[in-house]
Amino acid sequence: MISKMTDFINFLNPLLAGLRVFLKPFQIDERGCFDDYSYLCKGLTKIQVEYFIYNSITRPMLAVISPSKTQDFNRIDLTTYTQTRQIKESEVLIEILKSKTQDDIAELMSISEKLAILNFERFQTFKTPFTLANAKQALLAFKGDVYTGIDAFSLDADDLAFAQTSLRMLSGLYGVVRPLDLIAPYRLEMGTRLKTTKGKNLYEFWGDKISKVLNKDESKTLINLASNEYFKGIDKQALNAKIINIAFKELKNDKYKIIGIYAKRARGLMVNYMIKNRLTTPESLKAFDSEGYQFKPELSDSTTWVFTRD
Image (spheres, helix red, strand yellow):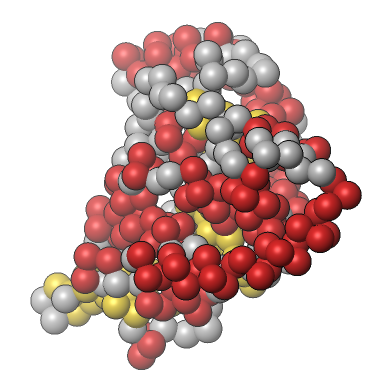
């Protein structure tokens, strides 16, 4: 890992030297303060912000994952954060959800009375703008199998800066979410049949809005590590990027099969691998070998890459 990081730094330094010439008129100070990136003043160094901007400009690859119903909103020390980019849409959904009774929520989401009460209270107390007092950075708030694989609390400031430009979470309430975007506790799965003025479910509500935000990230390739439920929320016709789907399979009874619990964790492991190795091209993902997985070209094609484990 150290040698890989050394090679990466040696590769990056001349690029940053040229980037500094480009950025000179913007006068980035030692705290990393720079116009629209001023939120990065909180805890990141100048070189970290320069790298953040460099990666924002190039954006060759973007991975998308699903959120998690399991969430942890205990306070943490990290003070760097961003705001979600589709909060207006979130507020529209919240106003609809605020009109629902506890029984309505239980029926709508097919959840227990206890969970219905919890989410009724969440919707009623939902308040923007988000701060560190009422919200938390998304990558650190979500739990579950995918996020166990990501192991977000093992990521340092450089890792988080890279993740911010290379990873997106898809949410039924927040749309496209970046790792450092603040989110409040919620439950609203993308497949929920919530009626809005746009239609009978959340897919019709979001329409092409998720694709439009992803297009603003200007990635050439979208790596699909999300579940079908959430990836369906992307309007493929409106998306500019090429899509590569990733499948993880286990050998069982002499056949390779997708086993949900293992596939979820593997998605997180690939995200962790991508972040810590600073991967920026799809081809580099083929070297992914965490916990015994290997790329299988004979089972893959140009749009779906299969990784197996015996």
